[in-house]
Length: 239
Image (cartoon, rainbow, N blue to C red; front, side):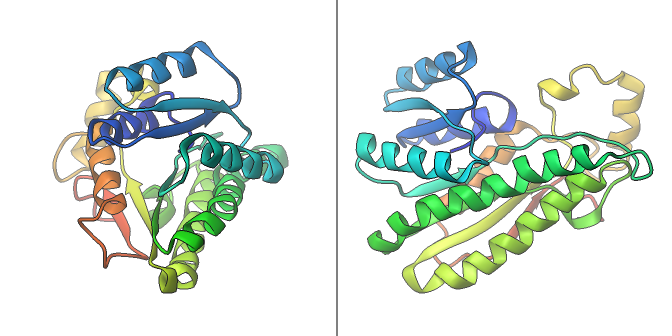
């Protein structure tokens, strides 16, 4: 999986490991965070290994997956979670801001899907779960680049689902709404309350609630579900 060292990605890795899955994950560098996650997952009794990879680089993604198959013997599930934001109103957004978000959020999904697809195809089964956002469905102020990237993931996933279905490879999207992570910890309480008031369930989601949705879509519990966009958003009406 991609983007497993913090937030939603970390929760997904832990949830899958608790279900007995071996975990191969990657980051841009062999950081302390990568080592800590590797140790945490291994302590859960599964095999886990972190790799250095820029997943938006086509050849690097190919090399990453080849090494994972060499080390683990196979790949059954891909979770594409790597993503960034670089928010700005369109009138102030630079070309670099737009391109940076699109490269990390969309190109990485393409590169990783291309890298794992031949292996899943030969096996005749597999699951790909791409992390989208309700922003990709409804849009959002000052996030045109991020919303465009998450909308692109939805279109890409639905197309792959149709192409891969004949080989029993399922492709789905989990679209979180407002979720509490390390990045939201510094949001003023008043602003947090305002945002939560717009959510029918009146609270933000948790990273583990998103992870559980990913686990469901990656598991054998839903062998006939593909091309689905599953909002995990507490009932936000725009989703």
